[in-house]
Amino acid sequence: MGTGFLRGYADLTGFKIGHFIVDSLAGTRNRAPLWEITCGHCRVSQTFEHRQLCNALESGRPAEVLFCQNSRCRCSRKNNVDETPSLFEIRQQEREKRKRAAQQEAEDKARAERELAAATARDAALAPLRAEWAEYSAQQIQAGTPLHEIAPLKRWVELSDSLRERIVTAIRKDQTIKVTGLRR
Image (cartoon, rainbow, N blue to C red; front, side, top):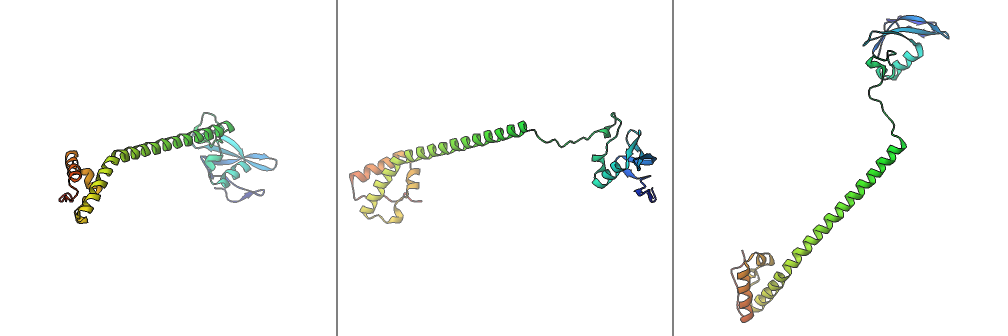
């Protein structure tokens, strides 16, 4: 390990910087030291300026900043490059996002229409039953049947068609008839 300073520069001899080990001082350039370092993967010796090594150390991620000069070494290039998307890609993503939003909106609208159609169909199917039940319940109230004995609409719908038909026929013939036992 370096033990001090060389002409105002830190002695980096023996330091491990990313995948590299600083071997020795190789010379100077513009009064700044040049360091002889060895790649930890390909073992190729190479020269780096002092500021490159200090910048790599100060970055906190020297392996992502300092690269091997041997083009065959796996440390010679950044593996996970953070690419900035081009304007074309940004616009394409925005178009796709708008397309997905429009598609989702269309699906939601179609689902709402299907649900409305199903509700309308249920109401249309219940309309005749509701009319029969209204006639039945009004007649039973007129006949003096206790309210707790009158079947609610839900129970009326559960009755078989033939039973409902017999009840409606009977109450139309005799307005004073009381129908009991339908309630559960």
